[in-house]
Amino acid sequence: MSERDAPARARRASARRCCAVALLCCCRPDASPRAPVDDVEIDLDAAGMGATIVAPARASVAAEADGVRITGGSDFDMVVRRGALDIWALRCELASARAPALTRFVEARPDRLIYAVEGPAGRGPSFHFVARGDAAGIPYYCRSAGDGVPTRRRLDPMLQACAALSFRRGDVAEHQRATLAQDRRVAKRDGDD
Image (cartoon, rainbow, N blue to C red):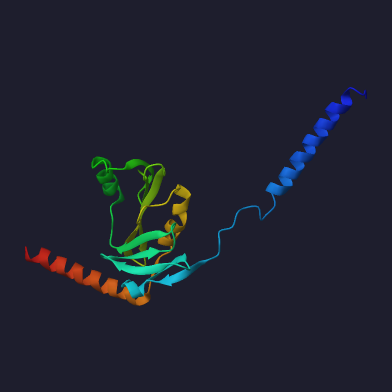
């Protein structure tokens, strides 16, 4: 080996060491960021809905026109309502009405819609969602409230909370009785025609 090759060998060895260190740092099992563990199960009964949802410990719950609003800081503000919602019809409505500040649809699936709206001047877009679910046979939907959040990723805790909503057994039984009564009324009406 000549002395001319020494600097090249040193650079290659240095590059290998850097790669090895980077791999060790990036591939360790706990390299992924962990979400803060401040989420708790919150009872929505006080706001008129016999259900529970996982939300930030600091969240507050309040009754709102046919639903429940859960607010847990600037990045957690959503409304939960009972009933079915047609996501595609909502998307068409938003698109055709050319909602004043609608920027774009970020994600459109049968069970959820994520869209961006123009935020206040200089703040950039804010992101909103509408998602539907079914817990123990009870249809419900959630939507972002307020001004939305500044990034798409900040919707994830609300989407996860919406997906994990669960109704209490008594509420499920009440829903089943109401559904059965409605079915009987429809059958009776159709039989009378």
